[in-house]
Amino acid sequence: MDTDYSNICQLLIQKGELKQQIYSSTLESMELFKQCAKEFEDYYEENCAEQHPRVTVDYNGKNLHEFKLRFAGDVLIFLMHTNIFEFPRDHEVMKTPYIREDQTRSYCGVIHIFNFLSDSFRYNRINDSGYMIGRIFINKDKHFYVEGKRELAKVLNNFNNRELDKQSVEEILMSAIQYTINFDLLVPEYSNLVEISVNDILQIEDQNMILKTGKRLGFRFEPDDK
Picture 1 (tube, rainbow, N blue to C red):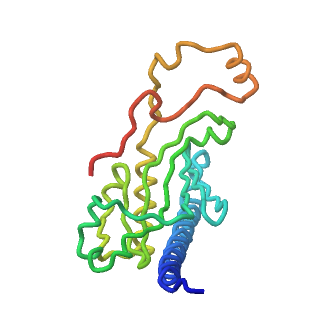
Picture 2 (picture 1 turned 120 degrees about the horizontal axis):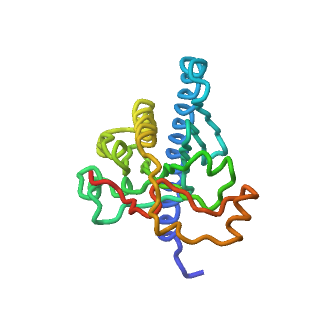
């Protein structure tokens, strides 16, 4: 065989091992989020639940890459993507000395944070909308970068130096909960509800509500300026 495969094999090994390392770092970070969410549930149960039985907190570690944190009328879903991404070339982190010293630091795993209404799951309202309120990028060194709405956007981003540890995970989790508590359900635009079919009414009667519900239906929902 005349073909020399050594260069392409070396590239394959380097990129493959890098992505596996990032996946492991992201998965370990996901476990830390799960731990902190469970600790929050335990704290509420111990200190608040008896005095306020109508307001509940419930943690559900659904699987390796997902967990739910339900509190009052809301649910936060943390979902880890199984693939690895690179920041776009024009992203602000790509201009830092940290990335310029080592291009592989720009590759990250991602954990998304979604907010849904609790009733959407309780009543199987499959047409209801949820919103991504934040996402966390984690590289091979467990350095992290947060994008998100309001409180999440204020999380201290120091991708060059800051590692995702328990303190930063707690900060992100509490910021997500705080934002969700203040992210109220608005009355939808009247024009979105003026027409309804007989079939819609029948499905509502069967508790399979076809009317779409979401916190900002009829309104634009965009990332807040940082």
